[in-house]
Length: 269
Image (cartoon, rainbow, N blue to C red; front, side, top):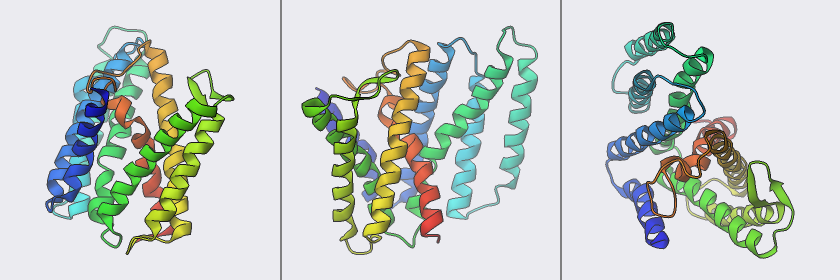
């Protein structure tokens, strides 16, 4: 069942990239972002805070529309920035009338959670649409592939020869040996990907791989930190044996915005 779930997940994430209509991919990833955001908010509540769910969803949807407007260049997004600012203000005003002892946490998590989620799920469109100077579909697939190859390599090598704990307080099963092994696998994959026609060269792809590995690992540790604070094993029950949406996308949620900054820094459009 776990293997079948993994295959279904890969098809769900990668499949839409091969469709000619990128707007469908945008809609799919934006929807997955909503489901992930709801899991994040649910976990936050288990820590004792009370984020404003409606306000967080409004912020997220505004960011989706802003991203759509900017990347597809179809309409002005000025009014949506205005709505975004009003929503942030309204969340703060509503908190005045709520009962609780954590007003700062409630407001900050209501604003941070949707921005954190949108930066990755909406950010995918940066590669699919905005970076038409790159082989956008291959770059997007490579981002997912490098994260998965690193994770798989780290798991297999860590299980075989792992001895030295990487960050035992947050993730007791991760080891330095496994992490270095996974990184090596991802670097080799990046070198192989660089030989595909139109892809960036070896130095750029190695930097891309390092960005995915580093921030993917930080995303995984960040989710582990949140789950420990919430006292839960999984963020949800999306896939049998794999947990929830946040469990599956945690690495991506750090790696995508970091990769956007990476390409803007070394290969600006």
